[in-house]
Image 1 (spheres, one colour):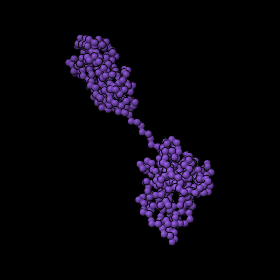
Image 2 (tube, helix red, strand yellow):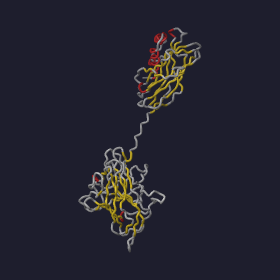
Image 3 (cartoon, one colour):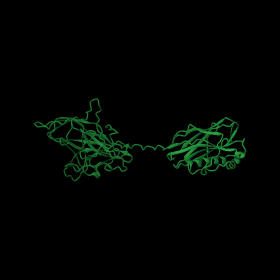
Image 4 (cartoon, helix red, strand yellow):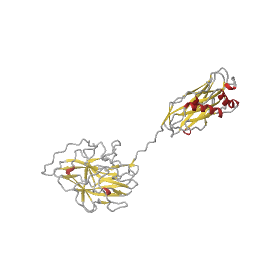
Length: 458
């Protein structure tokens, strides 16, 4: 509907809704004065009363706080004029706004109480009758001020509307056929901006297990026999967990994966080699995942209150140079619905590697760019970032990076990890390989963890 037509409707509606003798005469007066719809191109005669809006903002947010403004009616004649009815109008400009998406309140001139304006149904936009007082009397040169308050619903379409105020004016000094005129404010643009969509809360980190190294040797001899120790995972989170185990070497000097002999024990008594990987954030550290090669069963199911102990052993080739190193065990938690992957680490265990007697060790590798924690820094191992998957199914592989097969593992009939421990399941638990740190093609994929920062080890 065109804005001009809406203005006319506002005036005529105001006339028909008001009360009193003057108003009864108004329709006939409009007809006698030649006032017809805007579609016919004839304008209602100008009025000695002026209408101005003040304080109306240029924009209003859908679903936001109400906006307050004023409408001032001023009598410019030298005698009293009557205003039997006023109407506030919101013209729609094609956005499809509905009257029910707006709420208008007002305070009558001289009043202090907010009242709901009486709405008149329209197809688009809005029209509200201000009917208190029923007839407003304006002495010569005086003005009356309505305070208005407009609230825009959250579902109001964004776009431009045109608010304004129309008043029917009666001049008792004129003959009845000339008595009625229409006073109109300007129709300024009001831009409705969209409501702010609530942000989806960030997924919470998945619960993690407590991790420790048990019986970690203090020294190793290059070329010597493998020394055993244990990885212990305890679930004190109060809920069932699914974890993926790994270890990480964090020495000041980079440890080449080919000098390390790390194996973990299976339920059948055999040993499988750990699968090496890397980390773009810590290129000098060496990660080894406990992977069996069976991607469909690569997770330890750890019930609440339960614990798992995995036997491992470690050795170094004869050409390994003497150096100081440190080791931490890791537990990556497979995320459930609404969670992101998280991980926990054990405290670091420092150890030394001594060169084999009479051997010719390989050149000492270039020191890693990663700084070594000083005595003043915490000794807890930094946590290995886990590939952050937030899918609804708590699968360790769904949405995660692809993983290469375990390297040159001896054939073993049963590839489940050998484990001991309490909890509700003391039988050996099936585990399938690497931590959710997707160890693949020698690169640890760290998904979206750079911004979050590492979690401190436990």
